[in-house]
Length: 299
Image 1 (cartoon, rainbow, N blue to C red):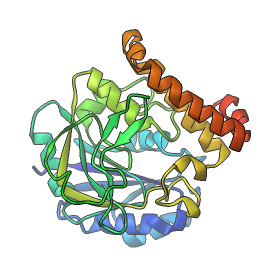
Image 2: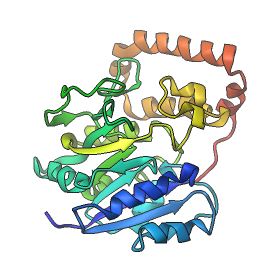
Image 3: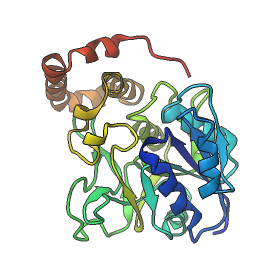
Image 4: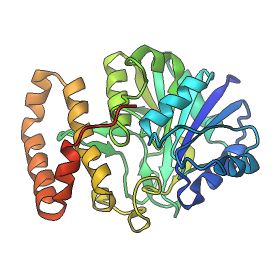
């Protein structure tokens, strides 16, 4: 397969992760690439750094921070590849990641999403091997936090792909597009990958996991404080604003995608999850209440 792959990397320049991310892209054994960087840092000088690492990259400077979902929409709009790889800037691909991952689309014509194996920076701990919907409407990252002992080394179908390194078939993206964007523009960050995966599943598209496509994910480098990088219970390390998004977007996702009878099946675990979520907010993060009810920005 030698078709064009469009790689989209939104970055706000935190810890200069994007330098290592783009450096890994420049070493890919699969060479038919189009790299698009969305400069959420709003720093004109960042473009010079990008060009120094990846001279062929296109850099888009938006008028404001688009966060993740709307930034990826901007990148897809600019791109022309038959396949689209969306990357967090704190993800560093192995040299043969794209070469191996793209083969997953050849398994069946209705494979619209491909996930590789994401490891933590120690290269011993699993970060994600595909996402699944939990009984309480959470995102279950398969293998999350487990030592990599080969338990996820078998190829196969998964529910969806995580947004940190999400590989999509453009035909699928266009099929499930909603109005102005492929990702729901209300989802600045969080749940946008599960929402898209769920919508794709409802349209008959499948997601496939290729364990030979390996990448490193810092986990949290794009959104959390430095103290929260790689830590469990990520909500503890989010700003009040992003914490409000985390809660709100989950409700949007459920309302958009779930059926009445499906909701009844999930009712008990979902209620227990709500009790935990709101007890934590009221006791430890009361300012999140104001962020939850504030008017959402329009992208």
